[in-house]
Image 1 (cartoon, rainbow, N blue to C red):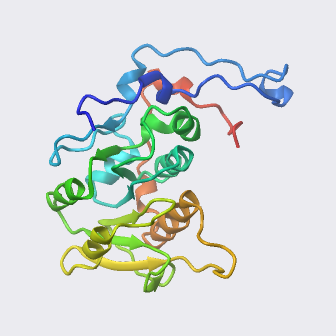
Image 2: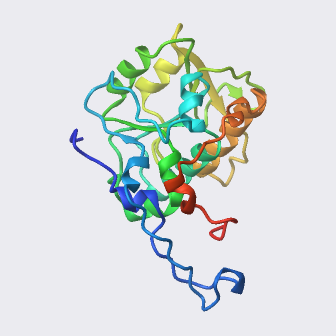
Length: 256
């Protein structure tokens, strides 16, 4: 992936204009009022491109929950070769809500400026710490250079531990595979390797007529179980929004 690749700032720092039925409380007329363009909005986007495995992930606004959580080595979500942009956008929103860093490991099944990716992430992209790695090998190199206690946990249909029985701890990296192929063998082996791996984990489900859970659902289930066990500690670090960003978010979630 080219080192100069960037998310298009305004496309990810604010939702695109949306048309459709909305309650009169939001202006009536069936349209969502456009929000004002923000001067310097690109300063709040938080995508770090690949090209240097040792490079630190780019933080969101100074003092943001995601930045503090990363510094305290709480939790990370790793998506290996995700294919559907809407899933990744939804996961980015979940990571923003839970102050968790997000890592995308290539090859990806979409471009990072994909419209569906933007829409699923809504206005929350500026508050997600994102790092893109070209390959699992590049991610592995990055992971090994991180300080503090850390371990890789593979979430797979054939995992040996049930997600709610597993004991999570700060420094866990929750690793998920693609929507169609799951995790590659090299990733599974690293997640089971002594010293860096914590094993494989599964989320119980009916298997007679359902192949798998949706990727974004799986991440939400696993991430919030891990956060619950850690007493949601990372949520104590709420973002202190810069003045320029105050208009980014509506008072209530009109997109829900």
